[in-house]
Length: 130
Image (cartoon, rainbow, N blue to C red):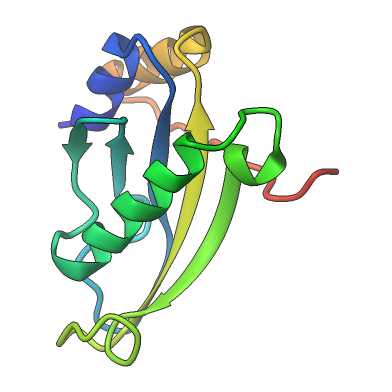
């Protein structure tokens, strides 16, 4: 059910967690859908197609940057699916990209445990340096 979460907890190197932060109009996946992008592996999906191809490229570009740089840690990107990506959906997807390190598992293990108990989980991610 949460392949991205299981993959994140098993990872041994940095990865980028890509989340559909907002979906306007017709888009492949709903807000909250997640995909984990590692240097040579993917887990879960944000809908496939060109959207996922572009998201994977952005994530791997972030992985190549030094982790101390804010841009390497997190960002939000607006992607119009029709005009920009040539997808027939025609909506707009806002994707949040967040670098996650292998040593930050305690937070995500707590999320996994809450989900296993069918508890709601709210996670906020600041996208600026403040």
